[in-house]
Length: 109
Length: 116
Image (cartoon, rainbow over all chains, first blue to last red; front, side, top):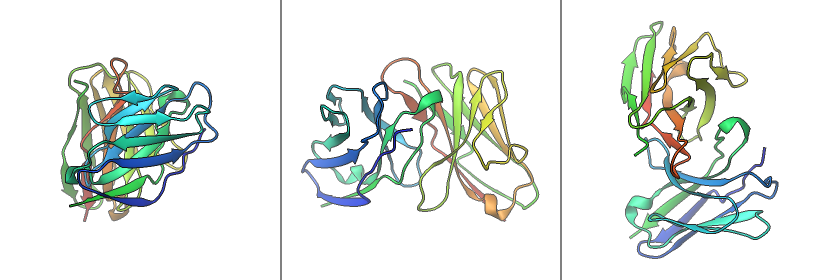
């Protein structure tokens, strides 16, 4: 199973873009990169996922390097409500999602 | 779309009693659901995978007789914590794989279990 490495924590300023890195150097060719976030005492919320190409939706953008060994989640205009733990996950077999420690993002006014 | 409803959101029970947590997919059919537990300041730990109409598959170290999972329909999976003890106090979260659209997996809001 491909594992991911994320920074433990990061701060960002309200209104600025937040760039969250994730390393997944052992990712297989057919494994997707998923991003979820968990606001305190809630269930995880889906943000975005991708295979090879960069992806964008109403919440964020996902940039995947050409070799697929790393990716970056971009929150274009961070708000205080974006404070959460962000998880980068590579989908394993049997449709299981395994969570690592994630990155605790604190958005400051 | 792709909403999973989890109930109750919190429950307090006495040691030795059993507690049932429900997870329902509201607008889609979930052939596969997952159950996680999360201790304070820790990440989610997968407990088991349930498939509609068949026995659940438990992760290593999870007691199947203590955490009973039933997935009798395409929209409902239940987790029963039997003979609960204080060390079972945790945040339990269900999830379902969504086969349509771009959601991938969707999660319930979680159940905070406190055993006293």
